[in-house]
Image (cartoon, rainbow, N blue to C red; front, top):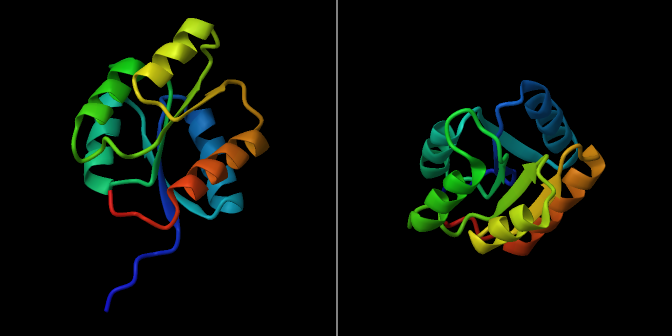
Length: 135
């Protein structure tokens, strides 16, 4: 019998190396999750398909694809459509937030974000999916 790790997997798609380090530190240290990193949209989509994370944290401004384009592709793909997505971005206009939710995001936080707040939101979203990791 094989046992899966009890750690949830969170894919962070963000090109900001400083933000990636901070998120990785916070989540792996305080939220007991395994962080998978992708520095652009295309790599993020591939990582989501291959690694099947429990949650995706997605930036809006990426070097190759915009966050909404990545989100749209993730939600159209049968393999990734059920993975919850948390937008973490500097964009705080109401229209941007509405667009993200319309495209399928389950959460939205604006940068700069308190790392404690991010950890709380991630924990909340992971708790909502429960122990079902069979995406």
